[in-house]
Image (tube, rainbow, N blue to C red; front, side, top):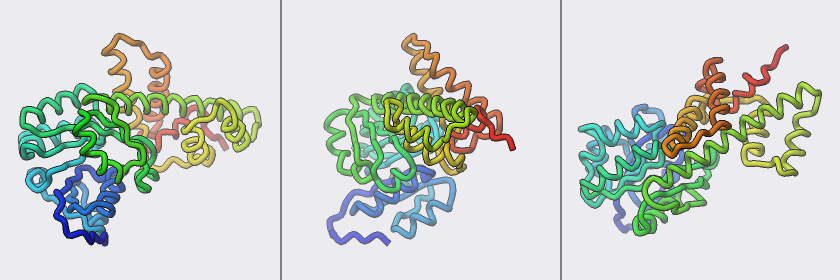
Length: 302
């Protein structure tokens, strides 16, 4: 059980979405803040685990909105964000004036700006603050957090965001955090796709794959994707289901392609990567960790 020794009463913090990333992020808040943390999720298991660390359970979004001055979202996609926030019994309709809503999901930029406008009408502060890095980083509390909001709100949120992330960057106005995250993921997916092709070519030419990635890591081919997705997942061909799935990768890359289309750009490399991810999903790997596309590009045949 998390212990808070300071008797000062702090505003309650709400957290909606306790999945792969949200659960460890909420856990870090519960362990590190003096505030009461209240969680909401459609599934009981993460709520039961978090209850052991002092996280209270909200039975409804209306209750959470009534109880919390600051609410974080960590949801799987824009549709979930829209449903949680914008429906008649959702958060925006019930949050108090002067409270704050922070979307840490990866959401479409247009939806983010629309949600910010709805919040402004109700005098609710809003920031987009999507996160990058892995579930392990979420557990450690050293995520990269990309924040879109005005400078005053950023300064106010920074101490709380630092409980979940080691690198918290003010990217600009509302929507800029989402743009940064979407482009970060676009580059990551393309890097992983390139790695799968390099591994496939090397394996079929009888090159030792550990040596391949070791050599690449010492040269200009080095990357975060190589040192994490490549070494930890693709070399051993371990692609768990409770990780960033092929379906999630397609969703985020779709946001990037939509963003490019909105400004008249044709991203051919990103489109090829989307084709590869689609092949992986069609092969039955939609719920597995997205580097599983290696199994499509270079299937292991006994």
